[in-house]
Length: 91
Image (tube, rainbow, N blue to C red; front, side, top):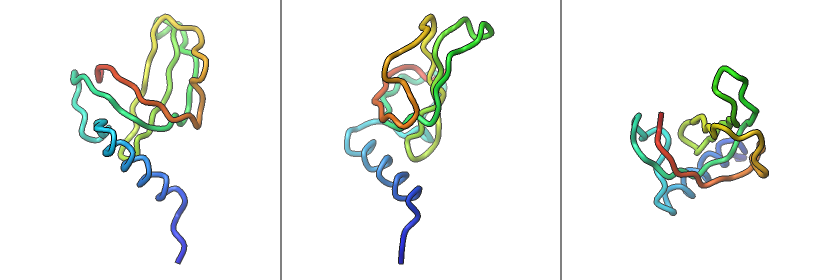
């Protein structure tokens, strides 16, 4: 039997988060300060609507969260496919 490559990625991300003590996105609550590990699915520059900055979608194997860096025009290394460890407050 062959396994779905996407399912293997999900399991690997979940295992990596658990082994480093990072929180799972599915367990995070608004206002909570968290550390997460995941893979960037997308990134873009914000428009004026969100006060300018960089946005990126981080997927940790359980759910996705939107990361926002206000006041930044570009952040080297923030691109789809990268694995990141991030720390901040859930909005």
